[in-house]
Every structure is written in C-alpha cells, then in structure tokens.
Image (cartoon, rainbow, N blue to C red; front, side, top):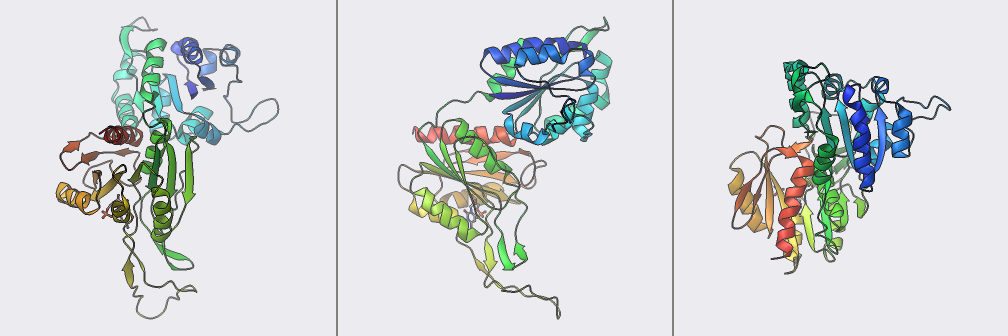
Length: 395
Ligand code: C5P
C-alpha cells in the first residue's frame, strides 16, 4: 500500500519514526509530507533515510524548482495518515486553509484519511478543537483519539498521541481487505447521465459518482475485475483492476451495461440514470424566442429492469433507490419490479446522505430483511454493500 504520512509541529513528531518503521516493515511505501513547524521537531534527513524517499515540505524542491504535485500524491496514496496532528493542522483541515503542502495534499486526497491528534489537554478540550474534529469526522476522516497520560507540558490529561504501533494497527486493519471476490467480474454503473436537448444543453442531475467509484474500488481491492460504466463526472479512479467506460446518455449507458452484463457475476447499479430524455435533439442551438420552450420527453430504458430480465440464476443484481417519502415501501416495490437481489436505499431526508456528499446513510433491503446502517464515509458504505453482496455469492 502507498501511505502519505503527514507530520506536523508537535513534540510527538519523533514517534513518526516508529510509525514509519511499522509501515515499512509490513511492506508498505511511505511518502512523508511535513509542515514547516514539523521540521523544527524532526529532521527530513532521518525521515528520508527511513522511507528511502525525499521528504516533501515545500510546494517546490529548493534545489531545482521541481513542482511537488499534491494532486498526484492524492491519487498515488491508498491512505493518508497525519501523525502527529496539531490543533492548528486540524483547524486548517476543517476549514480548507491550504497554506502549506500538507493541507493542499489533504484537500486533494482521494484515499481514506486518518489523524492522530497530539496536543495539550486544554487545547484538546477546547470547543474549537472539538468542533473541528467533529467536522472532519462528518466528512469521513478517522480520528485516532489521543490517550490520557503525562503530556510534554508535564500536565496529566488527554492529548498524548496514540502509540505508533496502535496507529499502524488501526490504519492497516481499516484498510485490510478480504480477497473474497477473486475471480469474480462485477459491473458497476455510476454517476449521472446527460440527455441532450441541443448541441449545448442537456438534462442532468447532481450525482457526483462518488458512491459508484467507492464501490468499484472496494470490489477491485477485494480481487474482482470491475467494469465501471460511468456517466459524465469529475472523479476518476486509478485503482488496478477497474476498466472504465465513459458514456453520456442513458441509452449509451444501457448499451455499454447490457453488453458487459452477460460476462458479469453481478452488477451494482449505482448510476442516477435520467428517467426521461428529449423526444428529439435539436441540431442547432435553440434560440431564446417567444414565450418559452416546451420540451417533449420520452422515457429512457430502465437499465436495472432490463438487466433484471436478462439475469441468469448465477448472477446477482443490486440497485439503489433515492427516495423522499415512504422510502421503504417504494424501495421494496423497486426491488421486486426490477428483479434485484437487494436494493440500497438512501433518503434525501437524512443529512449528509445522497448526492455530492462524502458520507452516506443507507438501508439495505432484501426480499426478507430491512437492515439500517448509520451515517458513514462512502468508502465504508461501499464496504458494507460489498460484504452483503459477497454473502450472496456463497448462498
Ligand atoms: O426507479 P429508480 O430510478 O428510482 O430506480 C433506481 C435504480 O434503478 C438505481 O439502481 C438506478 O441505477 C437504476 N436505474 C436504471 N436505469 C434507469 C433508471 C434507474 O438502471 N433508467
């Protein structure tokens, strides 16, 4: 695994050496990104000797002006661990104050983020710190709580960074994946679709594709070969084992998905497919004239339903439902109508759930059960959904 280790200005910075040793010993690559204050506590020479990589601290390398790309670090990493994380860094993370390389790297990070705070007991207890931590937790950051004990100030209380062995254990356990999908082929649809009105306009929706990407990455990390068919979206993946096909409209998504479904062991239909598309597409930009514009829309192919009809006994089909009212009843009806094995319900009434967010709160509905889950980062929600799918392969 590739781990970005962020080090900030705290006495506990010396413990980062042991943490690096723990990661390296277990075969992981570590890239250190240190804040200017961090360098006052531990030297880059020590850190680069332990990681066998130059330490990154500035936006540019001093010697030759090479740009350090926080964007590529964000894509390279399988995890980001900030240990020690000072109150200041936690505050900057919570509010997006990107005045050093570590925070820019954090803001570009695509992988799960873990922080191990280290500070004096009063700083830890301060509402500013606690509110910032709460914000980060809501956005999916895992906070490895500090322990109680004697602090650098000689006061006794909570604020001592957790021991490096324990930090490594928390991070590696959270990221460890069973290889229970080895040999499986899984089709995933993700993102929105765009339905053209004329050469410059379309009907679309707010889907970001984050949930679909999280599912694709989870399946690939568990050994599956993944066919990801995605609508227009910003987010991409670099995880090995995922073949991405880009489409625009519901019709193109149907074509791509139905072709690939025949070879698949399962399909997870996470895309927010448009239900209607313009009856005809104008060749030229429609002019702003008259009282308004009337669009005639026709229904799109329901991909889930189409695949539900094609489904063979060995294949599994998972759908999503985003509902605003009578959620469970509507989801149960879709489960049946589309011949799904289970449906993942997310309600727009839940704060932090649904489109654009990094977190989601779902209920898995099977023909026999309704299983609610708490609000979690989308990566963990993907883990729960794939766990459920994996049990179906064995039944
Ligand atoms: O009927 P509704 O759109 O709410 O159903 C949602 C589920 O159906 C999702 O899994 C979605 O990906 C899928 N769907 C589809 N093709 C459509 C509409 C929805 O695959 N045209």
